[in-house]
Image (cartoon, rainbow, N blue to C red; front, side, top):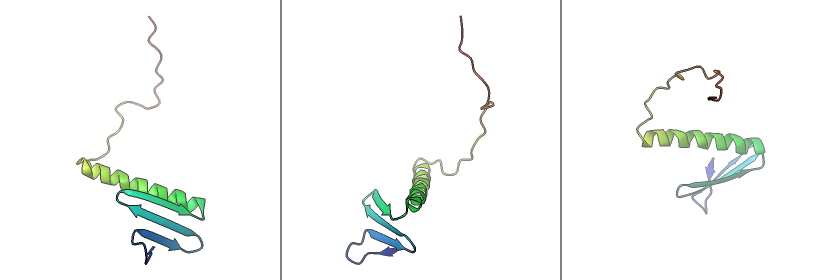
Length: 80
């Protein structure tokens, strides 16, 4: 990414396609000439946000746990 000279919160990545990212306080607006590039950037930002939230609530060092029962168990309605 390169930082725009006039607007310091505007970042531009230009290769074969163009990705433009505008950051304002805690908001991010982005667009690209390639839909796939937008999707990849969106996933990257979601992963970053998830890690930040885990850290904020002191859960960043926790280990994942297995589901206590099989997720494939079929449950029926309780009929009386």
